Length: 371
Ligand SMILES: NC(=O)c1ccc[n+]([C@@H]2O[C@H](COP(=O)([O-])OP(=O)(O)OC[C@H]3O[C@@H](n4cnc5c(N)ncnc54)[C@H](O)[C@@H]3O)[C@@H](O)[C@H]2O)c1
Ligand SMILES: O=C(O)C(=O)C[C@@H](O)[C@H](O)[C@H](O)COP(=O)(O)O
Ligand SMILES: [Zn+2]
Image 1 (cartoon, rainbow, N blue to C red):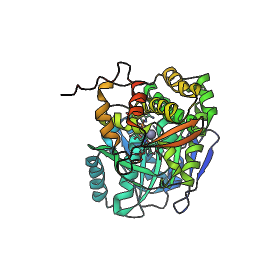
Image 2: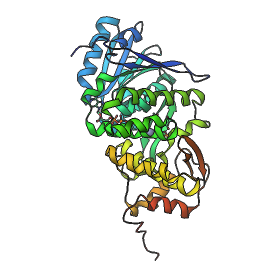
Image 3: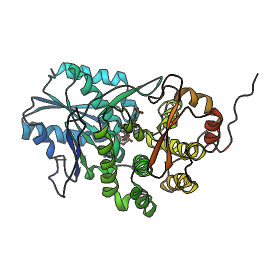
Image 4: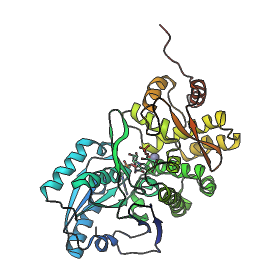
């Protein structure tokens, strides 16, 4: 495989986080060829990637060596959430040490959200911060993970609990990469697209109603989602306030991921989390029935899960307490008062939390009996 030439129109979406690096998210087909120009002048590049993208990574390395004069190295990491581990960050740091990576060298994150999160974290921590170019190759990576500078790894105590904010140099979303993406991964990415629809851009939901596979409108869905994320992150890069809306569905979603030992896809977990958030919003924020019901209907049509085991409630509640939105002993959720109108649900009553969870637990809660 060789790096493709540019074949289509390119859209540039600005991310302008005040006080932090400004950059563009570039969206089009055949963008890998842009990498040589982007990193020209650097001495070294480390291309962090999973096995599934080995051929692409090798082609990028060859291109950077031949056309940018950069000493490029492929750094292969485990697949999926297995990559987002301190042990794997340690492996990457060892490689960087071995190849003598300096402050003006550049890391390239080539892969799904797990890889861009890991590569971003390695870049944030190596020598206290080096540049990273994000090249997301999944729907989820393009519409969400690679944009906005949240980087990190999972630990036993929970999801993304160790990390840093570190904005990339640029984000290259090459839609051609999605040709090899398995359908189950497309569906997982659509969960974040649906999230963006409910919190901000209702047109997204209409496009998915029209074709729940996403295929008919994929470039538009990706572009619309990136535009929302870019706008939110530009206004609040360090999540001091409004950026929290991007966490819609994530409080329960991340808890499910933890309880399932990170074997669930992120998109699948937040799909259940959004149905729960919608039920809670119906109970405490006056969300209308049509919008609340639309969550379950649309996510089901896409093929995403909308329910979870009732007997796991105590473990989920424990996991939610270390969510980054929690303050002291207060659990906080992102809710919806209406389509596109987010609200903070601060310390909802336990009975209402249980009522909302019961709506996503088909067999009921089946809590352990009191001794
Ligand atoms: N930093 C953020 O703001 C942010 C936002 C959303 C999600 N995330 C994180 O993103 C992660 C999920 O990302 P994901 O859904 O992309 O999962 P992923 O990175 O595990 O990728 C999914 C699978 O697709 C494979 N793959 C990737 N690109 C491919 C391609 N083009 N062709 C074929 N196979 C390919 C991968 O090897 C993997 O097996 C989670 O860890 C989540 O927490 C981060
Ligand atoms: O970019 C954000 O901000 C988000 O919350 C986007 C989420 O989709 C993403 O899963 C993020 O990694 C969650 O962040 P966390 O701070 O809850 O770990
Ligand atoms: Zn997410």
